[in-house]
Image (tube, rainbow, N blue to C red; front, top):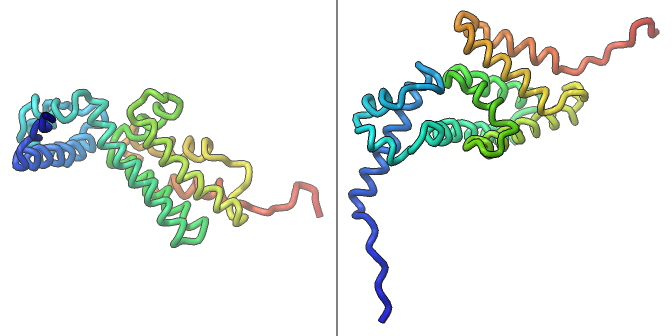
Length: 202
């Protein structure tokens, strides 16, 4: 006689757990925006109205919480890059996407540093989603280069080093946050292809 499978948790219990999960994430977005990626987990639990044990059941470590929170952000940026590729001219798609990337870095204090730390660390819980996001951004860059609008000697590593630097500066000097768009425009100026004659030519 076959033993029937053990019943799962009651539907109401699962729904309550999902509500707690989403509430914790929503509060974590706010707290990380205020305190950075080293935000207090105890503060997140208190403001979400759940016990610290409930938070740890969903997110056993700080990295697990950041993996979900920042991973969702990276996933959205990857999806956004793909959407812009189908609806915008190449250089405009790249410019708009980079603007959204740096705006996200301003909201999630420490995002730029977290992203840079995961680039070569395959064991990081953020590595996969970060790498997918970077590949999507690099495709926008390649598309703009193929259109002849962006200089050919820039690759994805250069691009993310530059825009991450803009995000990092805003993290370190909040007084420069208001100049983020200006700094990004300078980066775009540097990326834009200019067919100028060599000195002494002509």
